Length: 629
Image (cartoon, rainbow, N blue to C red; front, side):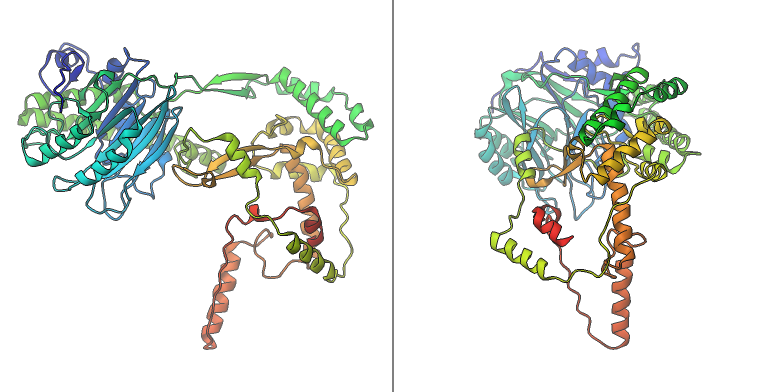
């Protein structure tokens, strides 16, 4: 292995060097870990700034991570011993501005590796270790794309000093290192390079064989009453691309945080903006007055449903452009509302005590550190409880769920690689997975034609009243905005003024059997089905429809459901999509039949069918659908 002099670029807070004294001098105000990271990386805004920490439980030290890690200066945080499990949602442990990529350990507690990667950096998972614990190294390798350069970024964790991970590491480097000009590998290798033993020599020889380089560090693991050891390592492919590297004391772990600044340009940090209407400052009286003055004559006189809808949308948007104009709002990534300045100041004092303990181990310094650590943990816990209590106290269910979603409770948002081909996704979504054979289609139509028609009157959609329209509007809880830019808030605020003309449009659509063209268009959003999707089949399309199209569908659905129920056209055992029925009623029916069979000493055979991508496999041939109806 090459001996490289990094004196000018090596920074340590684990020694008594001058660089340490400039940060932790007793005459200076205490600096938090986050302050130190910002100070170190600020001179390198055009570099890829990476850090690694053996977190010894992300859930247990989430508040410390929130207070210390900022995407404004750090591009990637690699985690060993994440302690994350599949049952723990990523949204519960999200860091603002980062996407969490995980490889959890299952089958045994502890362990696991993860990467917090800046959300705007494209990535792809190249390789990861099996999640089931097997006394072998745990790792996660990503391909990240930076300024048209591909880098291999990896994190590795060896569970203990007896794990022989060298063959698997050799195989990984043999497979991937020739493919990438830039490689950065960090982790807790549980191999102390301060010792001249066979394990250390074997690791150094392995790294040298691939022309890779270990960046020099001092001891990174400081367990009480034990000899410090160098377990956390940084391996790079190009030492001349390293502008800065070193280590910092992390008060919440026995391991130091190791870091490097790599000379490869990441994507430029761009502020995120949302375009929202300012409904809070709206003058409701003036809005009602202007809405009452709108001339709807052209709509009542028109005989084209598309002209009606386009005219209605134009007049409504013009009204709200005057009273609630669209404004650009910058998204702020606040780490956590309960992390008050007082708590951050106490965290800085705790960190300072931890560094003092490492410089001068003694019972007095240990007791001082423990007092500050426990006080800090207690303050964080109490502040978090107060914040939750104040946010949930005397709130209705809608407000409660809205708040819970802000803290990650609810459906988890899966991490998605930033290099997904949008055109390929579009082609995948628009191509049916199953194409019905022409002969099968012909036989299906023939069999449908031979079926007996039900002995009941045909369905005729009736006119809807203003009260029907009002009920349908309030029955739709979605606040999503479709491609027509009309939202539910705009309709509800002006409902008394627009209800007559809206009822006229909906009735004209029903009687003319015409559906407005703009209501047929949807915004398609691909949502990942799993964490860290890699294939196109790992995404599902979600359609955001215009709000008023949902109102019309709700009115038609009500009349169609009433027709089917009144004429007993539904199978009595159908539980899906029926009022008063659900999966509970289906389970009750099945369990009741099984109990009855057991009482009669009969054998029960249960056959379950699961159709993969069932809805997408439907042949939307008009003749077949009309034939079924």
